[in-house]
Image (cartoon, rainbow, N blue to C red; front, side):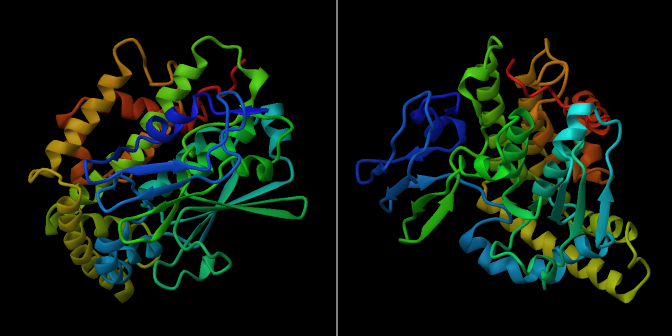
Length: 391
């Protein structure tokens, strides 16, 4: 028997960090949900049926629908190209200082992360793998041709491929990847495949009648019902899930408008990306730098409008960082206490893509994030993520 740590209504409306709204002319309906609080949370997929007045604040990797359909081509030709040029195609991350249990857990397991190096969603996935000493290989995906992920119907990043004993599993979506692998760490006798089945896709019918798929419990961990003995464990996981959703649905949308706030800042960002890689000084690097900078500067402006970010985009970023620090409080070093939990790791991963840029220098100067940020970075590099076990 598995449980999701909260009742179904909390999973649907709180744990995901989403807001479901309706007015006198609109409504939403939840159907096909069968569960009890301490049983498997989903026995069938959940369908959300919405009228035109239904509003759903959900963020997906690489953005959504109408806005992105207009700018995707320029992003591929410009903004994403430098991410590919900046890194060699394959990097092996051999973690160190395994404990006996870690060595046994990952024995015979091959994990490959398909990514863009400076994508916030990919960055938080890498941060998790590093924090929990998970050995993996990373493959930089070409942003236009995407031949590295031609095996997959899912064409966004990150993607994680897991091979063990001749069997292969594919995990899509950074939050799902983190939750499945974290759950695998704390369950001795449950396979990746079995865990993946605990995160079913649900369907949202939007106002245009299009069906969109989402995973309502992707910010939650799975474990045996009788495993939870620590006091306040459920409350801690609930807090963690809500802030993981906040990082996905709010914080991440502040990054591009700040990194590419002005054309000169966009050029600075792409100059840095290109100089890190093997195309520095080549015509490909020059095209990536200038084409990418212009494209992402335009995209940043559109994202600012779409997500109703303040005219001075730095203000919202400073406020977000201070909101996060305030949530941690004075009595904790991290949200996870003495060690960073999954929320700490995800927020760090999102913010870390700004390092070495003006936007990062500004945020550590004008917000209260600096002490927490560098403490989290140190803990992740030393593989000191919070103990996930409930006993």
